[in-house]
Length: 177
Image 1 (cartoon, rainbow, N blue to C red):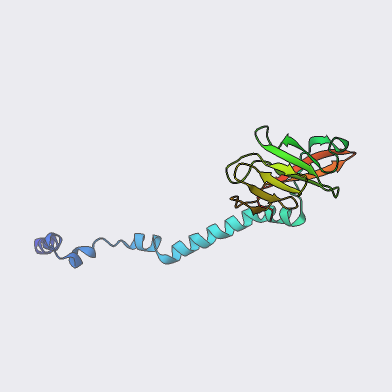
Image 2: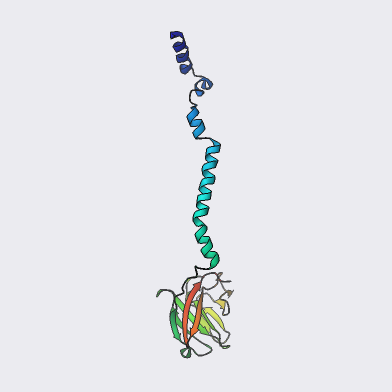
């Protein structure tokens, strides 16, 4: 018996990795941490996550998530005659905006900070464009897209609604083109 212990002890003291490697394998760990167990866990987690999001998917499909838009009063319609503009602040007091009543009678509203260097944008009545005088940036009045000068991005659009002769800001779209 001492010969077997001696022989086993000599194997552990050997520098050959292949001899020492076989003692590191445990059958319990091999059964617990194998590919099949990993895949079972991954599939189970995927199914659980899929089932947990199912109620939200059904609600979104049915349209139950229509958000209530908060209307913010801008002005009375008669205070903004055709071919004029007025400034206001939306969505916060730090965000200047411009409401334009075009010659054709349409109402357009955009945040009035130029997308180039945040200079103020003004309505130019004669040519019906939005002008940034800092670097001669011009924006199309109909969609807020830059048409000349250094600005590369469109002005954020402010959605407006008119109810009972009062103009309201109803939301804002940063990228709308």
